[in-house]
Amino acid sequence: MFDVAIIGLGAAGYTAAIYAARYKLSTLIVGEEEGGMGVTAAEVGNWPGDIEVSGPDLMERMKKHVQSFKEVTHKSARVVKVEKAAGGFRLQYEGGGTDESRTVIFATGSKKRQLGVAGEKEFAGKGVSYCATCDAFFYRGKTVAVVGGGDAAVEGAAILAQVAKQVYLIHRRKEFRAEPYWSNQLKEKTNVTFVLERSVKEIVGDGKVTGLALFHPFNGSDRLAVDGVFIEIGADPAVELAQQLKCALDDRGYLKVGADQQTSVPGAFAAGDVSGGSNHFAQFVTAAGEGAVAVSGVFAFLQERGA
Image: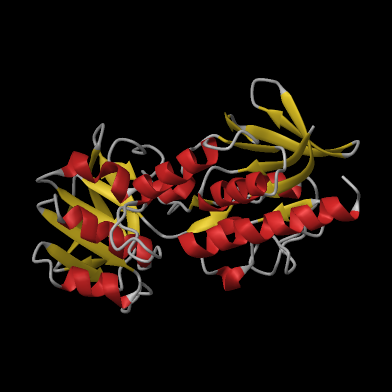
């Protein structure tokens, strides 16, 4: 039985594993997507000490740091069930197999929201993407649309503008929610067109995306001819596994945690984008901070119980 099982291979999970190893806790870190949402960030301009670093590079460095500790077992697997067991918790994996731990840290992050419009599912992977960082390369010299108004959308549009012939940024409001840094970056791009106060009605194509329909006309037409559509409208916390233990949620649907990142279930902690800590400010630095605090909480919890 491990002292702590960390579910999630992103910034929160990796940081938690590093601190757990330093506390000399026997540690399992497991997940199905190495790097988590962190690998979708092309540029991380606010990680202390690194003026320039990409999300994939930062996540790879964290992973190597974790793997340098003999106290940590790193496993790539999908956890499908978490339940209470004698002395702690039991993790069950897709395809079979289990592990047990005295405590658990949910660092499961978030999952991308979908538009929910006609054609979205049909053309997923055939012109519909949820990650500009991952797929921008495939649209060199082509015309694309980005849907959204937050940091992810504006950053994605800036990334795509480096390779695409034309980028349409579609936002249902007049003002963006993104950091001014990214908005200012876009204003300097001559191949970016702002399609404001508009919403997507349907994504159309023939085997692959060829365009999209808008609810209201733009420049005299309710159709935009595009080769790809990047949907960047935010994400929702991945709380499903924690809810199997009946961990309480806050009013925004995130896991409710105390100052030590412990959930409403004793011995179960949460860190990163799945947690309501850090004022819901989803950043690399806050995820890492919560991961460290969660392990401090785990250590205190185990000490109190003489484990």
